[in-house]
Image (cartoon, rainbow, N blue to C red; front, top):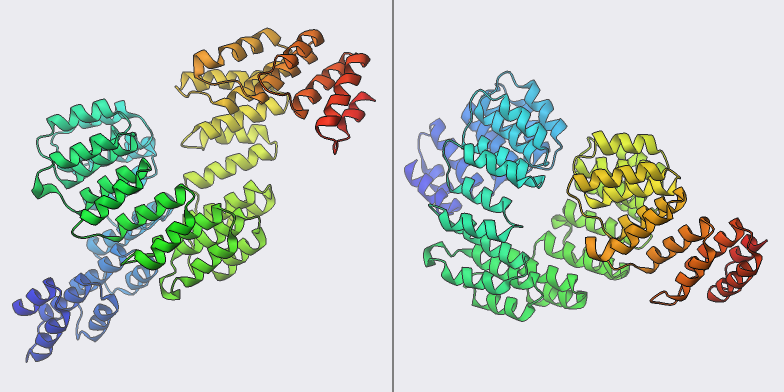
Length: 581
């Protein structure tokens, strides 16, 4: 048994099997050691055959196989085994719970398994806590954390990471400072929270009592993504040789790629004694982001020593974004059928959707894809929503096993698009867990476009209180809201303050909003003067806004001039003549 175990640990599975076959009297340990050897080396089918041949598989045997399926993300196989087990102990329940928590299942499904458990230990509580914290639900994480009778380092670290994911670094640091004990994982998690604040990150890194490869890699990545590839390289060079593993080399390569320094990244790749698929995929992704999809394809086909489904999917997405659907299809079909996973299938139907081939995308999604996860469901719903097919998007959302953050955000945007503002506001306030600038803009814009300028301005003030900075889209909605409310001076104040207060240079759309505001209020002379002083040639939209003001104020002479100019700018439009009449 000891010899067989040694062979299994060093990857010599055939030798382990020969030893097993030579054992004259096998005990339960012999069977379990052979199964473990297969599992340890990734041969799950062989391990399952061993389990099926065992004279009397024990709870340990069943749990070995169940845990292996869960770790590999094979939740269907894990669930089938779980349901067929003669006895379910805490280890079995924790394995199936962990499988659901780590394979993209939404929190509702994880919670259902948790609630069915006959008892909970600290492992099951930590698994639930981890599943909730990974969604960025700091409130939900805190409720679970507060309800735990026993907490470990993992519990504290999950609570800290949940706050960090929502951007609340102060709350994350508060949890960190209250931890009764900190290991290198907790320190590294706090570093991750400071990834956007390089000064705080440097200060924390300096006082870390112990650093491992993960913490060094994180700092290198943070410098790279902060735009300082030189500091990333300096940090890499300062590392002790014993800490410099493959992930650190990949972090340095990523730092160069992130800053568009392909030659330097290539130099790092050539210096690496061992290159894994992560580094090569980073190179592919950088080429795609720079629009060099053909270069990425050449790397994929001719250079990469090892390819993963992510490698193929990266190039598929690159061609999709370049509107080259045929090339995207060709790359997808070059991927062996046995290696097409949910990522590559999602890339294919996303390519169809981006190229306005929604019917084809739907066929791939509903007919061809063997498996779907929450990412693919969300992508299909979002594709329909972007195209304005709200009924189809709603149908996809209704078929989803459960809704995560992205799905809830799609539901909110659908409510905005359909003009159901009360429902949209209720979702915005109570359901959308991560209110990014896109969500704020959607809600403010919906109010402004639907004649509820007061609500738009109130929400804009709330946005300021929440510490969210506006962008050019926000300011267009605010200027439009003031225009429709007849508040010319307030609109002018916002317009003038845009560069100084928010660093936003007024665009043609912002100028057109001011023309609209002046025209609606009867200040046609000022509106015409503003048109004459535009820092660019006024477009059809700007002259159309002025013409609408002329019509409201019955200024026929100015209206005729505006209609003639608008008609010259876009002869295909008949609206100027309709407004003039």
